[in-house]
Length: 321
Image 1 (cartoon, rainbow, N blue to C red):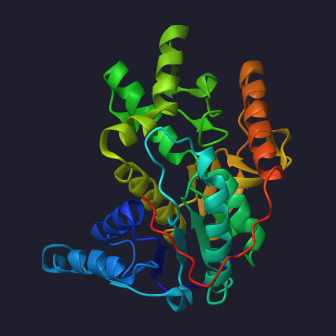
Image 2: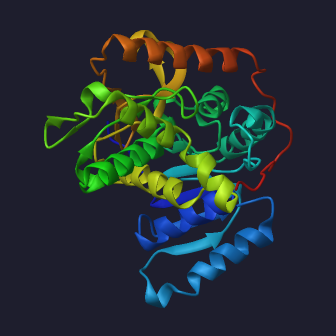
Image 3: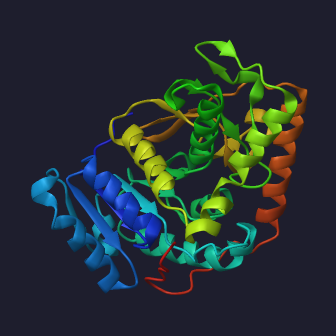
């Protein structure tokens, strides 16, 4: 498939996640034109100006404040906007409010986006909100991607690296399912240099718990997460822009893989210029298959239990933390 795009990335939501994502993309020069959009126009302008003041010390990318019209011709539109997750608040508690916000944002962005733009969702709970976004998007599901468990898998690899005394970049392990409490570590495929990990069950359980609860720990300490999710979004953007065909555990709509259909959840996917190119179906052991089925049932109940979402108003963008 031949896809032609202008080199622009639009980020809707100039809160902590959106701003740190813009900064990461800016430093790595992922696109020459990076646009921040937020209902708080002054906030977006201030964040962009603060980055641009350092341009002589950085690279050639430009960061600026804009509006939905800038989605026209963009390679990627990232949505980070939504109500912030508060200390002690579960991802599920955010759903009702953020579902309506997501529907509004997608409806407004779709008035301008071209047919080749990839829509990348980061707002939590990300699997469900990616599915809501897909309902309102005028593009194939393959072009509507949730950030999924890319961050969770990175947390897992970091944790394993700390335990094993190995560079996290050389640890190969995946978290799949929900980005949330029902996620699971695929221990049957975890390895370093091709060698399976021989860790006691209790240690595996502790590492999996620390991975799952990593966001809550950061939120308790500083009020929000932003840096690691920004790096995760940057990695997904790089895979799209460079047509990397990278294997990433993004959230996508499954069509029979893993015995799941018409549901967004996170599994290893090949990601390139056209979005999700294909799903890789890992050979799971019995307990892993059961855990993934449980995670899918949690997500299914959540998406079935809410309305499809009705756009509230044009430019309904809330700052995400």
